[in-house]
Amino acid sequence: MKIAFLASEVLPFAKTGGLADVAGALPKYLGRRGSDVHVLLPYYREVSRKAPAPSGSLTFRMDWLGRSQTFTSVEHRADGFTAHFIVNDDYFDREHLYATPDGDYPDNGERFAFFAKASLAVLKALDVRPDILHVHDWQAAIALAYLRFVFSGDPAFAETRTLFTIHNLAYQGQFPREILGRIGLPDGLFNMHDLEFYGKVNFLKAGIVYSDAVSTVSPRYSREIQTPEFGCGLDGLLKFKSDRLFGLLNGVDYAAWDPAVDKLIAAPFTPQDLTGKSKCKSALPLLIGLPPEAAASPVVGMVTRLAGQKGLDIVVEALEGLFELDIVLVILGTGESKIQAALADAQRRRPRQLGLKVAFDERVAHAIYAGSDMFLIPSRYEPCGLTQMYSLKYGTIPIVRATGGLDDSISEFDRAAGTGTGFKFEAAAAEDLVAAVKRAIIVFSKRDLWRRLVQNAMAEDFSWERAAGEYLKLYETVRAF
Ligand code: ADP
Image (tube, rainbow, N blue to C red; front, top):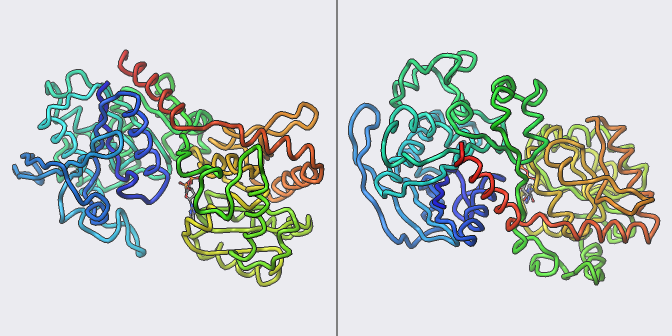
């Protein structure tokens, strides 16, 4: 099968979040299964550092901003797929991908419309003729409008079926009406059945309206986004398309996230021999500014954006209740200053019970997954979530709010049956969070039960090998539409 991916960030070239993990790993594993995969992304400044040796380049003509112009793309052979970088230095040779610390780049609509249209022009010029065009998030979604209204009837896409994947519905790419004319789309699309959304043009809506099928990154989130609570104003439209809306869990790249081979942790360990995990636990306090005796208590870790989505405000409210359980809480994160301040304040009050590091730090992240006993994820919503899957592999028991991919990937531990992989709570409320941690602490105090739970967790398989197989099946379904 020939598959073309359009994504605005792809590992190992450019990353700001989970999209990059998926858009880098899925093509790799599809390629290993024999698909011919082409991945298109912008040639950002940081890409030139990460892919220094292009294997080819292409010059193509395209109408842009009202006139025919010449552009280039650069090709790079990556692990399992071919990457095509869309070059436009005015748009992409910048310090950041989407935003400076002061806010979004004001021309983001034009930048990503260019990327989307140019990606189709490159696929046409290279005569790729993809069977599946797999488009990700709002930055690429508008490609489906170009496919419908600019490339309609083009033999280059005669056999192409399209899948649009939503990684986070909260980011939609909304711009003033005037953008349509500027980026070369008909002004007539400004109506509620096409791209209009409450007086703005909504790029993500193009992905939903014009694709053959839509998917999101967990089955539960695919149902949640059809409700007003999670639908971000698009729940009605998504419900209307529900017979073509799918939910597939992301995978984990176990080459990077496996305690048996992880080079970033104090000592390796396996389900059969957990002595390395104790060493990792002993090493953790020093890394995070806690006294060494902290390792004698149950340690609950968090690696997270400090944002409302991730339920950090609930954690702040629950702190005193948690400290009363005689646990140690270890938090690594960056984000909202209000949350940072509240946590720093709590740390001053409880220096022996709260370890806090405000940084983006891969090594400390791995140390927390490996050295904690439990891992707390109280998200208000969670399209998929990766951190619960990582902690399972490290025998660190997830305590999660039952939403989105967290609910799909974690099952409540049943003490009588010995089944399950973690602890879940329903309401986004401090009491419920504390109650779930309490349940975990009770099991933790019973050695044999805890050992069983850790074995269950470590035996879980969320590999990309498996997830890529599910995407292949979905592609076959979409081709039959
Ligand atoms: P989201 O993409 O919504 O932030 P995910 O659970 O899908 O949440 O992915 C988060 C990823 O970012 C994980 O790989 C996690 O380890 C990593 N991460 C988050 N915050 C930090 C941090 N401060 N330092 C290092 N890694 C982090």
